Length: 131
Image (cartoon, rainbow, N blue to C red; front, top):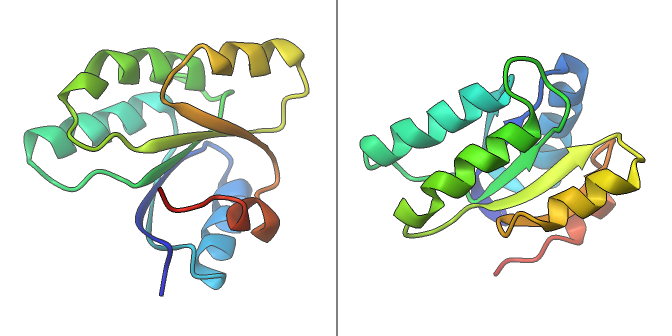
């Protein structure tokens, strides 16, 4: 039995997407993994789910550096709509950054629960508890 039903992975690198999808499903962390290639696709997905009264993801894994709309811009847009949500998805930044400023910046967003350094591993997923 999976810990979570729906997971949204916002990531532009196809190899990272494949690795994340495989590890999430292999250890039973999530039943459904939806992927979006950039923040704009991610925010559009959430907006459409709100409009169509569909279930939102339980957890969002968010890359920072992406084309079109990066992770920071996604978070700005998400902050603007999150008050419309009955259940706010948990957001974990998934990044290869080592810049301490990125960690500080992430703390400014109330929706961000944590920061995971790539690659996503079973240990990372085991550390995420059900709220």
